[in-house]
Image (tube, rainbow, N blue to C red; front, side, top):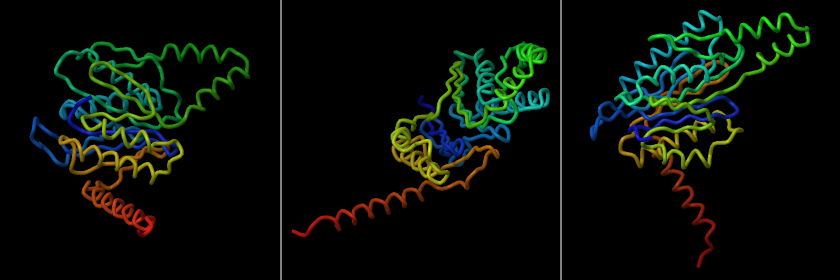
Length: 269
């Protein structure tokens, strides 16, 4: 989808890595060279945003409020999939309007249940229907100890990274790699060949940074700096914002190194 930006996120063995450029454009002008396109929602969840900046910021605050209310009511965080379902339900009534929001929710689920209860919308607010979960718990309490143990083990075993994409037209997808924005085709060229499950944090960061750099090199609506967030079982951490010209210099050094290696291998005539 073309939203005049470059955002990406992918899963690996160390969690989820999200990266985005910092250029906000208005038509053919650069409105802000240092905007923040990755917005923290709670301690274990961040969202990459693409679309209208004001709409993305507003719905990020609305989602953060609803997730905090859910945590206070139920004593646990909702899963990333549950948060994506909630956001999709809230955005669906605005389908066909000028609202433009495309978000990739990057989170770590685990330790507090699945949070996958059915979401029911009432009026302008949102609430979570836990009647099914209550019925299952009641049935489990009246069953044998073996059944109780299996049910408890099933709920506590779900832990790990999660990635969901939500758009203002109601689209909701779950996957392992997403890139959104006008620069996403160029970012996919790096991500498809470099992303693997066994990457280390440093390797994943290097791939994400290079993917954003490649996109900004070809896409006029992306550029300036790159933000990188890492989401793990301990929560999200943000790396220091880096100017993409540093990646440009690193690329020049790699090209020069490859040129010298070819000259060393080529036999003299």
